[in-house]
Length: 229
Image (cartoon, rainbow, N blue to C red; front, top):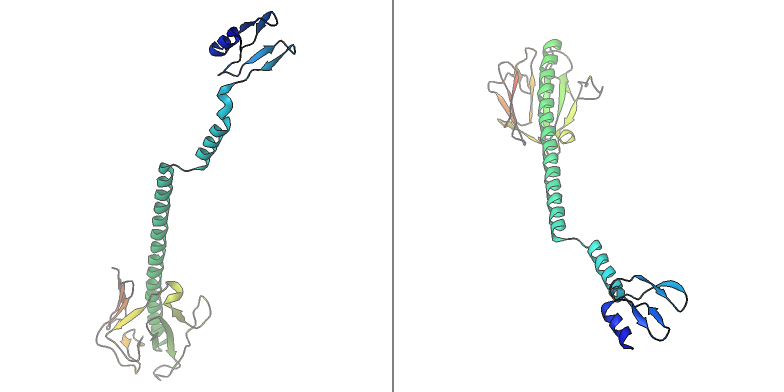
């Protein structure tokens, strides 16, 4: 190359072209500027050496945009653990609330059975089945001791009074102390606790639920008390 053109390449400046008698554009190595082209009489972009690596740079930016940083990954894992703990705690709270509702339901049913015995003067029995369900039964006539299974209708549903603890709280069960065989007790015409034969019980009955709540039935009055863990 002529010396003036070589100098132009090194400095990026416009140098004189002795072949055409006028100044020719030098090739810009870094800026990619638009320079005049004397051969075609119009402006054309000069060649920039700085943009030869453009595809590689674009690939780097694409990889950065598609990848996760370590901080982002840690934040995502932390948020996932927090949400999981909150969900598990919420489910535990719902289960505890359902267990409490089942105990309250049993307490209310015992009060209803006692009130029915007092008003009708016919004994009402509560029959426990494997500690997971119970039914309310009533003798057909006062003082006969003849009990059919079941006669008491639930006034809310017009269905036989049978309740399964698992329908209210999954896995809930109850244990009766002192143990009785068969597992049943009732309320006499005077409201006191009785056995299947109508004999008045002399000791209280304690029903312990699997959620550690206890219901105590007083022998002398037939009233019940609930204690929570």
